[in-house]
Image (cartoon, rainbow, N blue to C red; front, side, top):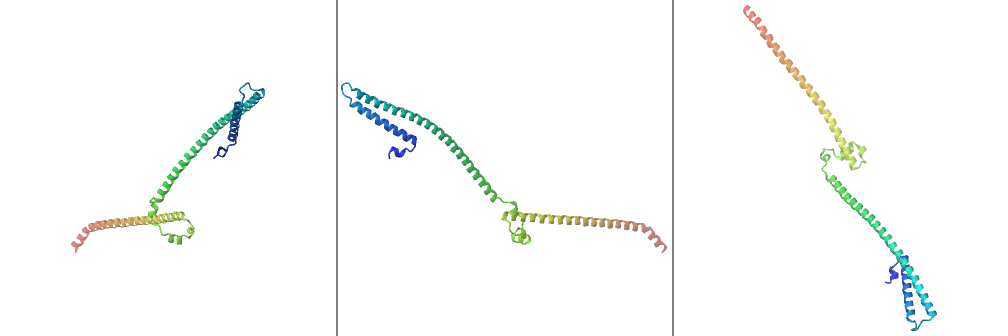
Length: 210
């Protein structure tokens, strides 16, 4: 593959063209110098040599300028490449951080999904029965439906607890009434015993009279 096919940058193409022209001019000057007569060259020949030398110097000056521009451009390109590389490294680091964060979140999600939640052990009523009793939740998703069933279970337990507390108070009242009646009966027994003891002398008096 030819160099012209490889190099596509316009400034480099100009440099290659100038370098080629400089080379051709140098060869032409050497050929002209090799044709110089062994004796003192003529004035016209010297003018041709001088003209060819000036042309070569012009090409060399252009080459130096192009070389300087290429050197400056290379430094600028190198600086831009370094900045771009830093940006790429920064983006790569951010991508790695996002990848690690994604893996962490995936692990957290998996842990949450496999976690043995306490609500799964609750004796919730079946979904079908719940929807029959509460048709307003028929269009709810699984998560909302589960929350509604838990709320229903909570409300039911609160109602049962309220009933239990009421029955407990009633039981305590009955126990208190029974205790009072027992105490009253015990006091009555004591009063009867006292009455019987007090009546014994009278009974003995009646027995003597009889």
